[in-house]
Every structure is written in structure tokens, then in C-alpha cells.
Length: 283
Ligand SMILES: C[S@@+](CC[C@H](N)C(=O)[O-])C[C@H]1O[C@@H](n2cnc3c(N)ncnc32)[C@H](O)[C@@H]1O
Image (cartoon, rainbow, N blue to C red):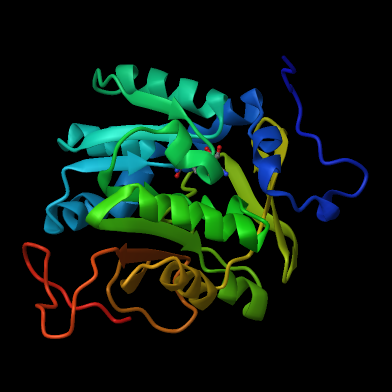
């Protein structure tokens, strides 16, 4: 088994545009730093109960977290009473998530190592909701992989399940340059997060920590409407997009978008609402 201690991007890092490369980017030393990057306390304050309230509104009980990372959402959802399964393609991330679960509230996470492209092969069951959070879907570089991952998510939802998937506001980055109000996702104070390079097919982010260590992630800059179209193409019936956890947002201003995609097929004339409080989709 190869254990990678340092990230490897080769001679020309901006040419690294492969879906499977994420496994080489989340090396153990970067995984160890992830919690100081996201700063759990500030991140909790930034997003509040947005996801918990949303899932409750939809009457969700079972959740598959497909991008568990170090467990931030899996642990919050488990603590809130959801039956949660925690998947990720990175074994190091899952090990950290499991340890965080026991250390932060004594939660024993049910973890499964699974790449989204083979999700239904490796994870058992069907779920009321799938969450893919923390700007994770951006790791898929080939459109074929994005379509395959969404098809797997769709297949693993119950007939009336929802997919909750977020992404950085790449439209703003591609059109206007990078800004971040730093409040919602990467909240840590001892890290500077910046794009090192951006073009239509790559956003290479740099994470520089106060101990002078530097890490990178190569990601595909998803335009918001493109993501919505892919979800629709995968079979999702209605898609609602929030900006920075707000229902209404203006233009390019949010740092992050959250898409909520419904699987349930309804004939015309059937009710528009399902959530306990009701909701109309905008797509
Ligand atoms: C940016 S991190 C986000 C982690 C966590 N959701 C958070 O918000 O802190 C992206 C996560 O997605 C996982 N990931 C990326 N591509 C994947 C794939 N194709 N299949 C499974 N997991 C993947 C990575 O291993 C990593 O843990």
C-alpha cells in the first residue's frame, strides 16, 4: 500500500484535472489540518441550523452524507437525531470523522469508504436525503463523472427523497475575480485560502497555514446553472437554490450556493408541497 505524505501535482500542477486525484490531495497531514481550516465552532455559528431545519421540514429520517470529510455534518446530523450513514472516498478523512464522532459527543459514526462513481455498489440502502456538502462535488473533473455521481445519488434516494448539494459561487470567481467574506465554510483564523489559478476548467485553491505549511486542491469551477441543469438531466424534478443559506440572494454576491433537488415525480394537478411547512420550488 502506498502512503502519501506530501501532495503530488507533478511538474505542471494546473494540468492536473482528474476526478480521481482527490485521493492524492487529501494526504494525512492535510486531513489533520482540515478541522482548523473549517473551525467547527465558527462554521456552526455561520450555518446555524439551516441543514437540520431543512431536513426536518422535509420529514427526513435517514441521511447519507456522501462527502463526510472530518465529519462536521455527519456528527451534527447524528446529534440532531437523524439516522446517518457517513461515506467518503478518502479513508483518512473517514478515520478522522470517526475519531471526531467519539470525541465530540460520543457518537459512533457508521462510516463507509465509497467513491461516488460506485456509490450504489458500496453503500447499502435507500435514504430520505443525501447531502454532499462543503463544496465537494467540484472535485469531479469529467462531465461523465458528474453525471454518473448524480445518477448514483438519484438511485440511492427513496422515491420522494431529496439531494442537498452545495458549491462555491464560481460564477462570481470566473466573472469578477475572487472575494470571500470567510464566514460560512472556511472559518479558521490560522489559514489563508486563495485561488492560485482560475480558468474555465480549473480552480486551483491554495491553503496556507500559520505554521507555514501550504496545501492545494484542484477543482472544477461549476457554474450554478450548469449544476442545476445536470441535476435536472439526472431526473430531479424540482431544484431550489439558496445563497449563503438565504432563500433570496442578489446576483453574484453569495460565497456559496446550496441546491435542494427533489426526486419525487408528480403529475400536474398533484399538490406542490410536501415539507411539513410547505414550500414552492423555483425550477
Ligand atoms: C472539500 S472536502 C469537504 C468535506 C466535508 N463535507 C466538509 O464540508 O468539511 C471534500 C470531500 O469529498 C471527498 N470526495 C471528493 N471526491 C470524491 C469522490 N469522487 N467520491 C467520494 N468522495 C469524494 C473528499 O475525500 C473530501 O473528504
